[in-house]
Length: 286
Ligand code: BGC
Image (tube, rainbow, N blue to C red; front, side):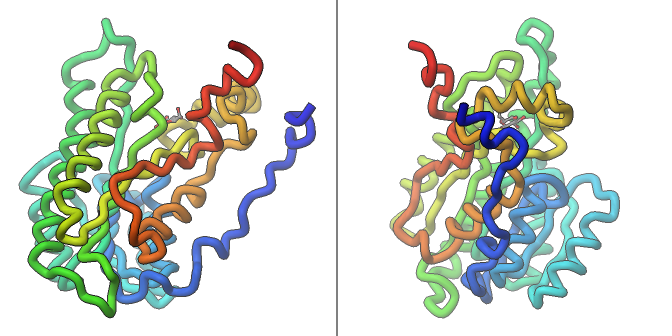
């Protein structure tokens, strides 16, 4: 069986894919929720591609300083900014800090996201509001401030042919319903039309807005889904490509989407999910 062949060995892309030269040289990026998981890999990926990076976080254990050192060793600039993206005043203050430090913003990665899982009849309003607040309202607040600056500054041809790029971190759950996670799936379904509506509105200003829809990626948010061999085996039944994703799988897509290589791409979600959105059950059923 094909699954047998790859059972213990999942060839991974070579890391140099994250460093396609310095294709983001001179660009200033803000990545929200950037001190762990997908956000961390994306921040480091953008930096390796030449961008200066503002690392947004809420709770830090020293990771931010380590990231700043690593980014500086690649010759890019970095700062850490503490802010809860669901709070309007904190988002505004974050942008003030960012613009003061870097002068402008070229790339926003709306990455911050949380899960507060519960069956519907046990889900509290606080759990619902926390998830919608960070995952959806947070993306709106951060996108709004970015677009203000993109419109003010316009295109700087030596930097990029676009006036700005927004990448929304969505999920396969913008299209796949998810029992026990209605707050999360609702937030990601919302992100889909938030992204598309903003993309439509700001395209004439040469601002590109897209989403990445990760599948199961090995990060703290879904640790229990892949941490044991039994859990991983179960998870792989949902992934035709037969490996659980790594944060760098998403970083590579983000670097490309942020770069001028993707200049004609706007208003779309790129699923990086090993085929999770391909209805894997139908490979043997239906
Ligand atoms: C969720 C993960 C989950 C994955 C696939 C992501 O958006 O945050 O917890 O493993 O979707 O279901």
